[in-house]
Length: 276
Image (cartoon, rainbow, N blue to C red):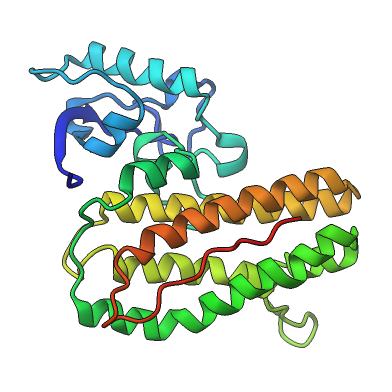
């Protein structure tokens, strides 16, 4: 089954409130729903199948659209402005599946719905070029995550955890030296950039598969934040939970992009099988 259009639903903007200026903040989850017909678009069969929204033979009225989407979001508790910001600006890749649809599928949901399905076309040369550019960084990041970061968490080495989850800092002339992000951090951007080359062609708008890839990468990045917080609080259990969650999101991302890595593109990425 392809990621074909199935029905008409409104675009969900977790940060945009109808009638408010872009700088305004939303005071309640309901205010996050932009239900105007001008913003209504077709949602993929993936989203429909995943969250059991009943298919309809006619276009929903604005009020029906509002009620249907609000019911889904409230049931799943997927609004996350505290972590992601009102405009998803705190996420590494702000335009992801959550930003567009207001839903955060689990790694298992992504894998189940996209496994062996027809993914968007991207020319072999485009995929090959992206692989050659980003594969070394991806391999380095995977090694860091399953190696030094995992061992630091297993040992409860708080300083090592903080170093392995370093976001990096910009320098300010001679006064403040720049700090490079740790490999486990910097690889997240490589994940997203490689997905751009592998999951859509140059002339395509952002595909659903790519939105999902960005969502997986963003959640991985947030898991690193949780590990750093756990290290500062010296909470070994929380650090292990965050590492396992990050592993699940990384493996779901790898399983997704591996589907479009043919022999002409390169070797498929090995999933992380280590644990803490």
